[in-house]
Amino acid sequence: MISAARTHIGNVRASNQDALLVLPGVYGVYGVADGMGGHKAGDVASKMAVSVVERLLRNQAPSPKLLQSAIEEANALIYEEQLNNPDYSGMGTTMTLIWEDDDRVLLGHVGDSRAYRVRKKSISQVSQDHSMVAEMVRKGLITEEEARVHPYRNIITRALGTAETIEVDVEELDKKPGDLYLLCSDGLSEYIRDEEMLYLLRKHPSLEEAADVLLNLALEGGGRDNISVVLAEVAP
Image 1 (cartoon, helix red, strand yellow):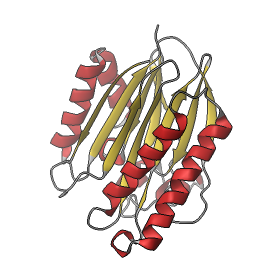
Image 2 (image 1 turned 90 degrees about the vertical axis):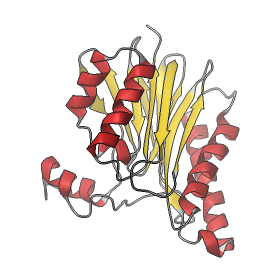
Image 3 (image 1 turned 135 degrees about the horizontal axis):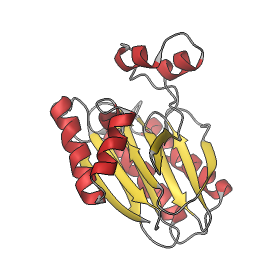
């Protein structure tokens, strides 16, 4: 895959608690972690998650079992750290990543950071938000439009480090030449709708340019949260 990545503190926050994983190679790994917690705790949690997963997956052949165990290991270490250090009490992080294999792409996901796939002329969200409003949408209690402005839209139901064990979503996605994956924290998806993402990605085929455009649009929209985006494209 070829890739481009951006992260920004945004217009309001005092620190950037997002962390990116960009590990190119034959079996490339790309991801976003969005930390949470007081002071610098969210920053610590997201960086720990990225560091642990990078160490465990680097130079390894893709495997759903290994992907799951790497994220579970990150969860265990973050949980232990927040128990032992009062300054980090209650910290946690989302994690959404893809791992390229020869004929498939593995997706690992916890939280509400998102993974999208652009294939030909369509875009689809391939991760499932672990959030209160997403569960309400799935149950038919509110609409997608209502979810975008719901006061509880930022309450997540799963995060690394908040419990001793974690349920990890791991999926195997088919791989086709030209597939483009967009991974982002909610600081991006909050401001840019799916169809707008598709339009901008098709308008700006250069990944570096597209990443800049997406980031700037989120900033112009308000930038009330940290903003992170990773673009990774399967070789045509």
